[in-house]
Amino acid sequence: MTPSTGSGPTRTSNRPQRGQGQWALGYREPLNPNERMKKDADGLTVRQRILDIYSKTGFDGIDPSDLRGRMRWMGLYTQRAQGIPGGKTAVLEPEELEDSYFMLRVRIDGGALTSDQLRTIAGISTEFGRDVADVTDRQNVQLHWIRIEDVPEIWRRLEAVGLSTTEACGDTPRVMLNCPLAGLLEEEVVDATDVLAKTVAKYVGSPEFSNLPRKWKTSMSGCADHCTNHEINDVSFVGVLDDYGQAGYDLWVGGGLSTNPKLAERIGVFVRPDQVTDVWAAVTSIFRDYGYRRQRNHARMKFLMADWGPEKFRQVLEDEYLHHELPDGPAPEPARHDQRDHVGVMKQKDGANALGFALRTGRISGTLLTRVADLADEHGRGRIRATAQQKLVVLDVPDERVEGLISALDHLDLQVRPSAFRRGTMACTGLEFCKLAIVETKQHAQELYGELEKRLPDFDESITINVNGCPNSCARFQTADIGFKGSMVRDDSGEMVEGFQVHLGGHLGIEAAFGRKFRGHKVTKAETADYCERVLRGYLDRRAPGETFASYVARAEEAWLL
Image 1 (cartoon, rainbow, N blue to C red):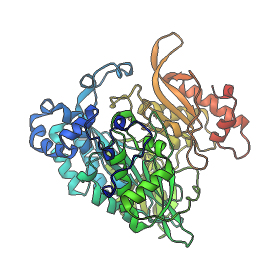
Image 2 (cartoon, one colour; image 1 turned 180 degrees about the vertical axis):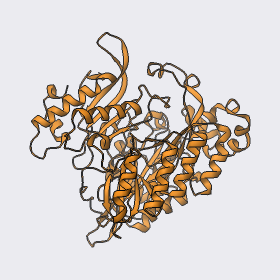
Image 3 (spheres, one colour; image 1 turned 90 degrees about the vertical axis):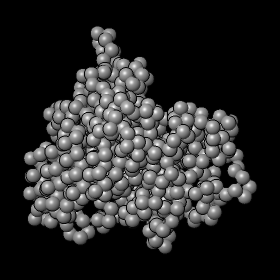
Image 4 (cartoon, rainbow, N blue to C red; image 1 turned 120 degrees about the horizontal axis):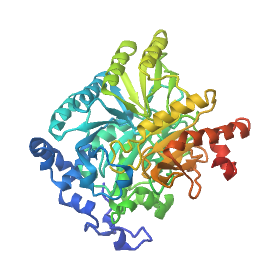
């Protein structure tokens, strides 16, 4: 979609015109190396060079602008070279940090997988990726240790079962989130499966949106538990019922975390299901045309929304892009449950059951993924879903097979009935593979929840503990009950060691808020279990009846939380 050309673009920002590099205001000159790279060649063009050239020349033959830029449009990032400590992250140049292997992100829109698809991903992990796989908090699966020479064969296998890595990364429409139980639960407001599939089919991989100012995160869901976290996506369509009982969507825009977290805002319109794809394209076009391109750290939708506000955004959306008004609409109902992860046994409306289970902070192996695919065939109908909380769900399990599947999964240390700590702990990729990370996360998070299970075996409340390797918040530390942001910290001897800044009491939903932090308060990696135990015991001792941890933190004296 393009803006109306009747009267030319209207000045919409209070910032200096030339300073932000907005296309709609006539400024298309590249203003930073990333914009120059995209202008020189669309990111989507790298696919053919990978097939024809780089897979034959090997890593050393890759053009640097492709290697550290356009490769992302095909879901490929160079991974961190092994053995480089976190203290070197901000010191070394990219070529000094990177290994000759890639992280490959498999795009799984809506988290929907068949057993054949999961088995294919698993086989790639085992054969080409040293049997390592990560289920992410955006319903993707990430593989590691991938050689560029193997990418054409990996793509061939993925595409043969209907999967892709196209625009899994880069300044593009990333994977689109949907409830993993879409279409299955009685309490669902609306099933977003079809509108999401239509949008993906029409626009993912299209040059129309292959050059956005930055990443573009989408959610379309009618989940009664709000499991796709619409409050922190760039654009979200949230299931609602209008005054006549018609199911549709409430539009939210401008959420995001990283170093400048911001909650999305309601635009206040009701979007019918048949309008969703066009409205999504219009919102995305606004980001493409009016988004700030001068500085990378200022190029997300949340910054434009902060300047415009929802009223201005709605006016531009309707007048310049849709060319018609949208009716006012209701806000979503509050989430039915505090936990949004779909872990446990859930009754489907057809009488079968969905079984959601916790991995080890998203980390799994190709070997285990193969077993999950086999179990989904054996106990269900071969349908698996990934959640936005690093979990997996097996669908369509008859009542008489529920306990057998729970037992089989538990034998693999995949828990349908995990402890509060196992269930609530997430971790980003961390220092093991990520070039931005400062601390190791995956193994530490696993050790942390294991230690808390021993120390607080009777802990009886839901709790989220999110462990992040750097300030970029891939594991959403600002929205966790206990959020750890990786940094270098001085220990008691004065030595710089891996550690974390602590954020407490973050939560989404009603009165959503980011975590509370305290000036200068950090803990070393070795101290995290002691710290969590101390703070959680204080909560158990002082909580009011029915009081959540986040509510307790909001009223707590600072001394209770240090």
